[in-house]
Image (tube, rainbow, N blue to C red):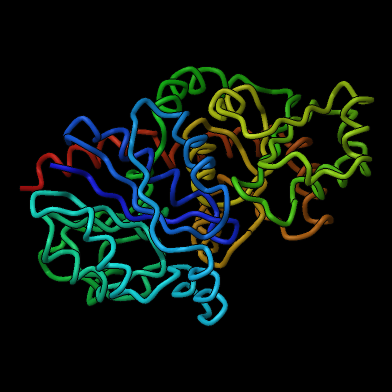
Length: 364
C-alpha cells in the first residue's frame, strides 16, 4: 500500500502546500510501503528544491514530476486564477496522477486548482482520498477533508462535501513538525517570565518573491530599531538583498541575515517577537507562544489573520507606519505582550499532526 501525495510548489504557489504535506507524510509514512509525491514541473530547479526541503525530514519520499516546463507555462499564461496553478486541465492531471496510484493506495491532494471533478476521477481508483484545503470555496469529493484555518467550523463545508465525508477543521489540526511540539513545553515556562524584549525575528515565508523581508529590514534600520533589538532575518534567497543591506549586516553586530534555515523552531524559541506572514508560520509561532506582527501576503490568509487578531495573538500591518506603530506599542506595553503570549499558546498546541494520524488510522 502506497501513500501518493499530489501537491505543487513554485515561485507563484510558494512552499507552504509542499511543507505541510511533507509534515503529514513524515508522520504517517511508516503506515505505507512507499510514499510518492506527484508534482508538476512549473520551474527549473524544482527537483533540487524538493530534495532540500526533504532533507529537513526523517523519511525518504519519491518525487515524480509530471508535465513539461513549456506546457505548464503555456497553460498558466492562458488560464487565470487557481486553475492556472494546476498547469493542465483537471481531467488530464488526474489521468497522469493515476499512473502512480493503485486500488489499495491512499491519496492526499493539496491544491487550490483541484476540485470535485479531479477528486471523482481519482477517488474511483484509490482506497481513500484526503483533501487538504483552506479556501472552502468549491465542491469536494473525498473521504477526509482537512482545513486547519483558525476558527473554521465544520458547518461551513455543508453543501460542499458529501454527507459521509469526515471533516476536520480548526487549528487543533495544524500540521507542524515535531520540533515545535518538543519546544512548546520549554516555551510555556519561559514566555510568561519574559519582561524585556531583546530578540526580533523577521521571516516573510518560504518564497518572499517581492523581498518583503528586505523592505522590513530597511525600515527597521531607518527607524533605528536595530539599536534596541537583536534582529535576525531569514530569507529564502540571499541575493534578493541589495548590497547596502549586506554591508549593514557586516557593520551592525545586532543584525543577522540567514538563508534557507533548517532550525526555524529553534530560531522562534530564541526570539521574543516576530514579524512575519500568514500561512503555516502562523501556527508555528502560536505553538511556541511567540507574539507576531503579521503582513497579509495573499487573500487566502485574510480569514486566519483576522481571526488571530481578534483573538489577540497577532497584530496585523500593511504599511511601514502601521509596522512601526505596532513595534512601539508592544515594546512599551508588557501587559499587552503577555496577553499575546497567552492567546498564542491557546491557538495551537502542536499536536495536530498526531491527531490527523489517529484519524487516518481509525478511519475504517
